[in-house]
Image (cartoon, rainbow, N blue to C red):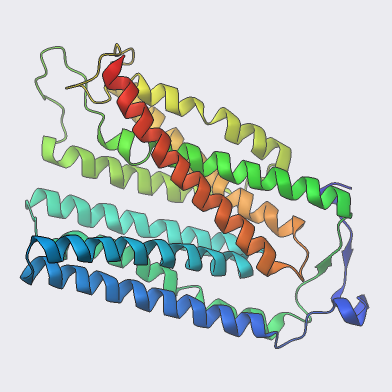
Length: 340
């Protein structure tokens, strides 16, 4: 039985041992975890700003290490909590949350451009975009209450075949890993180190040079958000998503042969037309937003309603692994570009 064809059984017809109580403690627990992780994050950011403003080099170094450790803990915990309730929401609500979260990148891009235009270099202003983006993480908190209220009569229970469920979940995790691996291999490191190609190395593009990288960030955020919104209208099966995620890895090769790291690269630049570069960036962002949102929405059809904790754990671990290996592979590409 495929995930799209699995049997839907009204929750009132489920045996008592499979029923999810109306006031399931998991929802209150995850809401508390979500708020605490955000609070820890903001405290770490404030301490970092204080250390940079008033401390010496040693204090700055120590505070930065502590901040990185705190951020790693917060991101891991927050993503785990986040996915515990994403899988039990109706797809329309789920896509709305993802759309709101990704739209925060547009605000980050706008603030990034303003800071570049006015040559703002203070740490407080640089950290502001990331604080704004993280504030969007507060939006799902109200969702915990709504899920807790309507769990017994609004959500249908899905009982997939055990063997098909294992296969579907495995395919879903592999798809998630490939998707995040590709995204973070290219963005931000490869995108931000790619320049407009000119044979004489003379910058004459219509966007001011100091605004070029912030413009790329804003462009990426806009089309990532648009791609997320498309997930509610264009539906793909899980296997189609898997094939699409694999096909999307071609963007790594495309951006590699653009004018990436022009000062140090030895590899030839094969893509010299800036129009091809911008079209590739737009398609990369659109596909990333769409596939990530559609993947989350398909996950809603696979997971048993009694296992949000397990699914949240494995999904967040897979996303973190894809992100880590994407950044790691990006550094390998950087080295290979300079050596060969």
